[in-house]
Length: 349
Ligand SMILES: Cc1cc2nc3c(=O)[nH]c(=O)nc-3n(C[C@H](O)[C@H](O)[C@H](O)COP(=O)(O)OP(=O)(O)OC[C@H]3O[C@@H](n4cnc5c(N)ncnc54)[C@H](O)[C@@H]3O)c2cc1C
Picture (cartoon, rainbow, N blue to C red):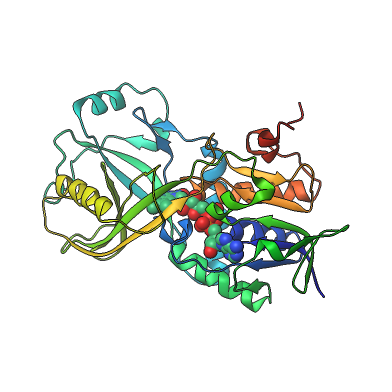
């Protein structure tokens, strides 16, 4: 038998961060991941946006999450020798005069936003109502995830395969899976958790996003350009363009219908030609209250979950994983807003 403290299912951004902080705390982990090509983390743009909504209100816990995320990604960047975190401007184009007025009368979030002195990108994009500049960032998931996977492999802490729930056995001291004996198993398997009977109480509201990868000849910028569609730089002239929010979907593959919708938004935004190189789709693991879903099962404490990162995996995952690690070590009490017990009516006062 191979013994470990934690068996972690999934190496998206959730499993990456949780395994990292557990190892930093001296715990033994094995991560099992089937490398699904269209998992949320492999399709996401990795944007960290400090504000949301008509009035550009600051995102939940942003002042705590952002510096923690920046420090964690930079630490991993140094270790893995890949570029991970980039502070970027979000060039946020107002879709209407009302939205511009709403921005001008907002009373919070000023430290993250400003009106630019000069309207840039005039040659490239249609922006009759102007734009605001938002101070955001991106996380290069396409570099981070494979580099961290390689690191896990070097630590002999990776099983590159699919976990079959039927082969999982609960024992008096934890769980066994094949030849692995673990004190706890933590599900960081994104939207796959919706089919996990141990956590059937959780009210998930998964939603699908579709994306185009584009070439825009001549456009070379480090800024994110955002209107009804968001362009995220991927290299000279290359952009991630998305994404849609679809609540009612048949499967997690790209569709012709969403391609048409995305292209319509692109044509409304861009004054120049573009070439579509690829279309991607994935499902976001969101809970009904849009808060992370974290903790141990109230009746089966060998089972845990780290999920529900929704649209904000890149900003939430580092801090929440570090917090969960402290909770598992008995050094902190889980924040009630993220506690999985809320779905079992077991929140303590
Ligand atoms: C189109 C789109 C755009 C997005 N843009 C952004 C953005 O700009 N910024 C942002 O912060 N967030 C964004 N998100 C949201 C973000 O992607 C998610 O919050 C985050 O990726 C969720 O990570 P996760 O690790 O929980 O799940 P996932 O990324 O889904 O990872 C789950 C992992 O578990 C593995 N797995 C599942 N079941 C098993 C099993 N039985 N055995 C073994 N392995 C298994 C999968 O292969 C996968 O690697 C976007 C999402 C989408 C879909």
